[in-house]
Length: 505
Image (cartoon, rainbow, N blue to C red; front, side, top):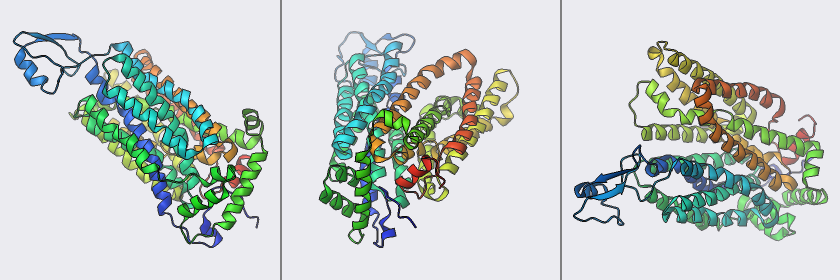
């Protein structure tokens, strides 16, 4: 039997006993970057209502009212006279407010920054290493929070969100790449799901803390995470693949020894990895080579397709309409609590995905995801169409809530974590940095398009038509996954490249 060449081989197959503890530690350390990105992604949800004006942006209030609402505002001047104070949409005093255009820019600039940074970060990681790239991204992460904490107007917030986008786009490239390269085959899928899992943890954290704190306080607390990323990840090793590519075999062996444990037999694995790195070095890894060779081209098509269907799954439409769905079920739950409930469901389901992914496989989780999400979108569209037409839907008011929960669970089991994890699995080492950058650019461009167009679509054709629109993409997605996406569970990188190149597994 031919011995496969690989990057992420389980050394148990070579006779040594593998210790997985350090692999989990390294993956969690890198995934702190995902928590940081999650806090950034969710920040606008609790913060923007505190920064947007009500219908009347200013109001004269008297001194007793200032005492009640401005106790923590050190900049407010309390005197015997009536004072004019800015009030936000929640009726609370504000240092400054954003108009509609400024609010849109604060929301949208993140995706632009992420799209700009993704490819350069991929190239940087390929040239200088995965570890220094992740550590360097702590700088724009922290700069974002410093600008936000000391913001005195829209300009500083927009600049902060741009730096946040640069860091978030970069971590979406570097962290999955690092996690994919330091883990062995038997747990690669489980640890690969950590990126999305920790992303949802960061989002949930922001929903919980932001629901009851001032946006500056939330920003101060969130600034701890990039510092924590440096403090913890500083002690993690570089990936053995990168070190071998730099002719640093002794360092590669040291890193692999720490990752695999003291009893693992590393000699054969290092030889296989060295051969693979040498083969990669002899190949041209440019864009022309990527699109003219079948294996990397198919990897790119699969990766871009998964990102496309992730964004066109309707996840943004469902999240956006969460409060309406809760109201249709007869619930009086406040919007902040409803958002937290969704965040809890998403986090738990993503964790379950990390447990199932090496047992069930990637394809079955992706297929259940697009099928169940498609059905839920059709049902939601039908319900809100009937509601708008005046039909009596109160007896089945629970139906959209059930669809919401099923949709979130299904997304979190499949199309939430798996596209990020497979991005690092599908590409050979010579293409991984550049291809990951292109894939992340695609993802963030789609985020920008869907975020920009969804409110316009909702006003033009109605929310029910939006749900049906996204359900159509889920139907197409079933065929895409069934015919194009390979099963990568338990397979080495070289085996995956063979399958993508047209050979049967």
